[in-house]
Amino acid sequence: MAFSTTDTIVAIATPPGRGGIGVVRLSGPDARAIARAMIAHDGNLEPRRATFTRVHAAQHAVVERAGDTRATRSVLREVDATRPADTLDQAIVTYFPAPRSFTGDDVVEVSAHGSPVVLQSIVEAAIQAGARLAEPGEFTLRAFVNGRMDLLQAEAVRDLIDAVTPLQARAAFDQLEGTLTLAIRGIDEALFDLIARLEASVDFPEEGYHFVDPHAVAASVDDVISRTEALLADAARGRLVREGLQVAIVGRPNVGKSSLFNALAGAPRAIVTEVPGTTRDLVTERVDIEGVPVTLIDTAGLRNTDDQVEVEGVRRARQAVDVADLVLVVVDQDEPEAIGAKHFIVQSKSDLGRPARGICVSAKTGAGLDDLRRAIAAGLDAEPLRDRPAITNVRHIALVRRAHEALLRARAAASSDGAALPEEFVLADLQDARAALEEMTGRRAPEDVLAEIFSRFCIGK
Image (cartoon, rainbow, N blue to C red; front, top):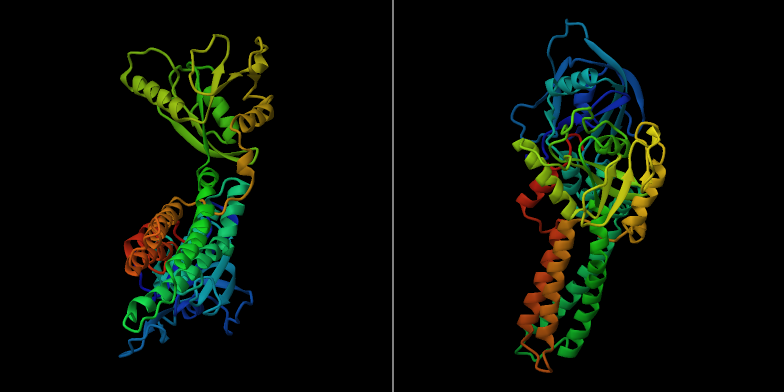
């Protein structure tokens, strides 16, 4: 990943595919100059004012002045003044000057018709004019580097984009708004104050200054421990909100498992045919079921077979049953085989008028699907997932746990059966706790950690 912030980057900021509108985003010191090189508008681009214009293949290239090493100083060089402009589209162009933009740099957003061909042509025109194609997550990375958000908020951007339920979206938005940041900042400020007093005691021992006694240190650490405990108490629920629960759909071949899977997913994700054994591997889809984030798992039909590929599919199906939070056993006429996990019997193909057993559904007509969704939500005991958790990210939970463990060591060092250890021991543990919190917010995050986090973003965000 390129960490340079001295060049200007460009990418399509809207999802792949066709739509009414697509947005191409430019960010960097030459964003406005590059935009001017590829639009027909003659006047200045006024800050935060939408400008209707035509976008064409770049007639200018933005180049650095000879001998000038500052990338923010640039001029326009004529490429071919006699060549007529190659109009790409009509567009709305909006300029957001630094530092009050998403990235903290100059930003220009070009809103054009949502054709992939048109949007890609605009990107190519910007590259011709001097921009560079953005790396995944590089716009949000620049926002982090420029102090527009901390690392917690930057990760919330991706979580908000990936949300599949309203609860996931609300939890991510809370984090984007800084609720977790404020909680971590409060803990960090308390640690900073305590560390400062302990360092003063350590640095001036010959003067006999002791800014805190062991009992006061222990009480102060206890207060901080209670805050990390509160976050960790919410962690298990937070992980469930973020990652969801798993529901496996199992049964014999051709009982309607894949049809039910597609109906619950709302899309033809799994192949459905009359041929037994069509599904030979696990097919998954994240869905919202009654406000609960659920990963549906379609599995291979459970039967004895000599087909080695199908044998492996059946083995994976049984593994899915073992780890699932709930199993839907789909039947049509025959009795199901024994399933040890928590499960519901689902009578498929109810439109054929077969004897009713369990929850009756028809993937063809949609009958019974709402009843099944309600039963799944009730069977998962998802009521604790209705409230927004304070912390959901696995990385954040691990770092809070690391800070909490360091605080427990500091508490033991401050007062162990009345025999206090030297202040240096307490100080070292408190500094370890603070380092973990600073890695959470990005103040002390290693570069490889940043690269890993932002590489998981989509290009254009």
